[in-house]
Length: 90
Image 1 (cartoon, rainbow, N blue to C red):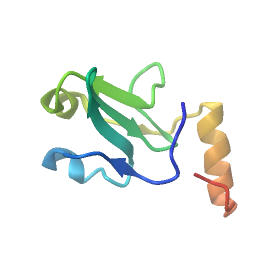
Image 2: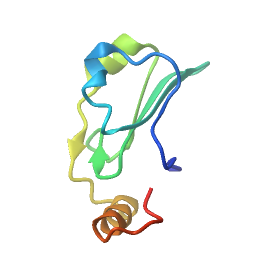
Image 3: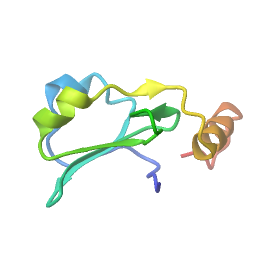
Image 4: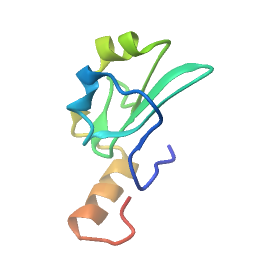
């Protein structure tokens, strides 16, 4: 999963999700629907995905419930970099 080093909100973000801005890495709408990626350390479901995809914002709002504690290798590496103050951390 490719992550950006800054938060990207392309257009609208529902007020129900605005309180989660600090853990939403990227959110946008395209022809396939709405995509919301969560920050390193968070996951979105039982299989450890880092994103939500629904047809519309109301669908995202209904299912949005990220959990902290992702133990995938990418998250572990990035969180370790951040904890050490690594300038290359995303």
